[in-house]
Amino acid sequence: MGSLQAAFLPAWNHHRRRRQPPIKGETCVALTKQGRSFLSSLAISSGDSAIANRLIKKFVASSPKSVALNALSHLLSPRNSHSHLSSLALPLYMKITEATWFNWNSKLVADLIALLDTQGRRKESKTLISDAVSKLKLRERDLAQFYCNLVESHSKHNSKQGFDDSYARLCELVCNSSSAYVKRQGYKSMVSSLCEMGELGEAESVMEEMRMKGLKPSLFEFRSMVYGYGRLGLFEDMERMVLEMEKEGLEIDTICSNMVLSSYGAHNALYQMVPWLQRMKNLGIPFSIRTFNSVLNSCSMIMSMLQDRDAFPLSIVELNEILKGEEALLVKELAGSSVLDEAMEWDALEAKLDLHGMHLASAYLIMLQWIEEMKCKFKDEEHVVPAQMTIVCGSGKHSQDRGESPVKHLVKEMMFRLKSPMKIDRKNNGCLIAKGKVLKNWVCLLREENASFDDVYGEQS
Image (cartoon, rainbow, N blue to C red; front, side, top):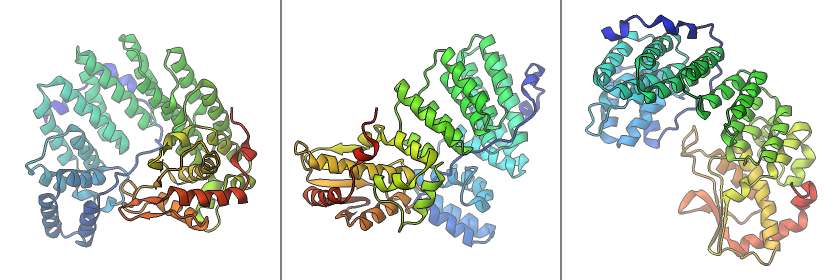
């Protein structure tokens, strides 16, 4: 514990400046079915510590390692759906440490320390820090990684005091180390956590210090800066960072582009998204599912339409007639991408459309494109008719409400309203299936009723 109370090097004080309010983007860890049942039981115990301890003991004893750690990770997440139970994270962790399968994990401990700090439980958090330092003090890399994890965890919880303390300690380790690995990992975590805390000026100072010490900032640091400025709506600085990346010879890729698009979307700057998507096309930067998610989650008209499951358009033609302005332009840019092709498989045995990873609006647009694609493929006699057609929606395992898949509900509603022969697969309730020839007949009927996709958008460049 004494090592944590040592004075820190004043040479690093220039990194500690005025703090800007952060914009958090942390997502909640999805619970397993067993974990959800366990936390529900804890909630019913109404604060009775004896009952809670018995439930925790029983849960850890009867659960596989992955289930127990999943429940703990959920409680440690800054945005979990059981925040009223977060005080039980420590007793759950302590019981898990007694399991035969338990292996000490610095990331898990760092997350727990950060949570305890936000709860004002400084004594417990200091004890965990002291134990970790004692365990790792002779292994410099591992000790540095622990403090990297700690500053990142504190930043995600927006814990000022804990962040300042762990940041100062990490700075000391980086300054005193002769290891290039320790310096590189330390700087990486310092830049990303400062960006998470909204301290972008300080993060830039750290990057400049890296250069002075002969360490060239990597793509990771630049991405952190781009997203950090973007989340705060500081678009000029975000675009300046993109230019600096290019000057450093770092390629603007899909990940970086998605960060830019997500930033524009978070501040309702749809007018900025259209030229960025066009730039991606001109530079040959491929769109991804996350590109679709970032753009379409920001389209308020589309998101609003999807709330009324009985009224949203069932074809690209209908959608195009309703959308106006930037949303219409954004859909046009997305519709010309290769994301649908990458989500599809087609052979004699099975044609499959995989919607995994797609948010609701993305799955909706892809489904509309898929219907048009089916019309084209079944019209072309050269394309083989698969024995089976499958749409993989997922069963909700990764949804916040585990087991409830919004995408599956959407697809079922679309298929029902379109009188499609596709039904839930009895062997896998995360899929819809139909015989290929039966689906072909249905698609042919649709083709006769609706205008084709090409009539609306023409040839995409």
